[in-house]
Image (cartoon, rainbow, N blue to C red; front, top):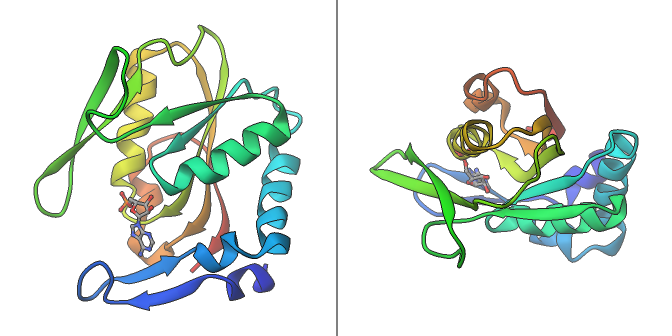
Length: 172
Ligand code: AMP
């Protein structure tokens, strides 16, 4: 895990002052590290009969799709407003300044499917809390777990995610 941590780059004051941004691009371009991440996630979920891996725009798509391929299951996209072409459900959530929305296609899942959500970073948890509500309110599926590459422990984001099991590969 220390090797993986070494390919996460800290960018101070991005996108604004006071934020230390966890840049995962060195991890993505390192074939050994990227494979280690996907293999770790695959080993974690391979016996869970996962039907759909949900990826959250945009970096979540990278990990969700590679994992879905490794597990042999489907990928579902949760996107920012106005990007999905078919009928959508949406969930509004608060940001530090103002609000935003997440959207999902109305036919994203079949009833009873086993679902996991994958994202890169758990920060305040605001985005993921909205995704969880979006899925739980509109679909009859089993949300097995939410998986992150990185959890920023000091932001206590997991406290905002309710009862859903949470897995984080790395803690900072
Ligand atoms: P949040 O809703 O605060 O948990 O964060 C939403 C998304 O913003 C996360 O999924 C990350 O993709 C991104 N994000 C927030 N804070 C950081 C950070 N310090 N470094 C990298 N990405 C971040």
